Image (cartoon, rainbow, N blue to C red):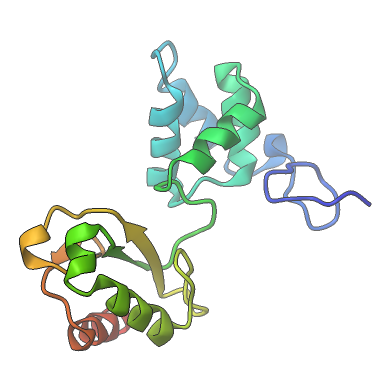
Length: 173
């Protein structure tokens, strides 16, 4: 039996239902229709999907490809190219750790190691309880207060291991 990946929308064992029969297909089609005639609509559509669903579901790919007269490979290629697009549902809280030069110089690498060890995940992963997803960013624009993190859109500077432990505890409470 051929190997299936998350972008295979066929109805084999363990594969997602075909996009046409997916409950969210009408919502996806409506988002695509909102960009009808807009040049370069792929990126705005992908951003809208992620904004609406929290991630880009593999079942949306064939619908986007069809709506824009693109191949599935073109859509998947764009999703894979841009690090901001998620292919899995995120945790309830998003923790972004800056790993740009200024933050690295001020200790973001040990801080990152502490975060990953504390949460028991790899970079880009979500805790088993679905509480926190950890993501890398390369500059939060807070260089004067390095190292910096962003938790649920709120910027924090001069972050220490103790600070991050407190932020994680608050997010989980």
